[in-house]
Length: 382
Image (cartoon, rainbow, N blue to C red; front, side):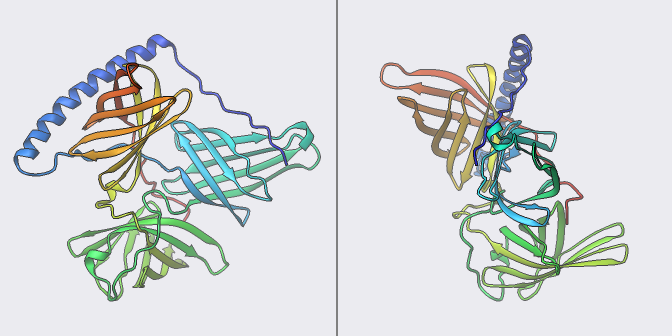
């Protein structure tokens, strides 16, 4: 079945307004750089790392499970700034729906041609901090309109991914922290694929999942993390397994209980340290102190760094490292190369972008500016 894709077009402000905004941004980041250097000097003098914590948007692109009217389909979501592409594989149809992701609302659509009855597919869904919930619609000139609820739940991304980790039994405290893939299954067969982050705080275990934080005391044989607010109490009862935890989640609201079977599998993140190093971070990218403002994604695993910038004509991927607060990476850019060397600061990164080859090398100032972080909602689907 053939598709014709109608691409979403971004509206742009006037060039004068953009230039003034960029100049103001440059001044702001310059001030941040001075603050970062001062803090770095203090930390270096004390013998501690001078890498500044990352405070920007975390990329939520990746693989999802799409539950449409009770049926599950594999899906892929790709987000670059406000531009979004959703690809749902159903009945052999895996052409993308394209559109926007603005203010935690996803709106994407794809139109087929007249040879396929002008079929239109569309999704509008709200992001709750973990999942997307909304409506899936199909319409054509012969069969009319059909709509069904859609739930998109993430699979092995948002900090996880990779192979599972084998751990000792009984569970040792140091083995517990990390990112886990999690499956919640109800008695009626409904299945939610999501993820969880587990941290240790002294002898307390904290699980962040579904937009909530659960906590309990450490035990090597069984843990019971609890979330309690108002008339709602959620309680996990989890027994360690070789790959993670298995047990139940009981959700009690106003005296009514709902129980899920819960399976948690710890993901192998390639040996990354703290959880801040397991994500893909998103930045506004400004080259040569002027518009357009581009989107960049920085993937960190230990000290390895991969930076991808969506240029006006292509995606430029550069590989390198983030060591001692210095981002250094190189990649192929057309017939030549593209490279970056930038100092981390509280507002992102600031440095130099180089492109070309031989005697045709050009240097441009570059800024990677933090984007607003997405907070976890207090009321996702489960």
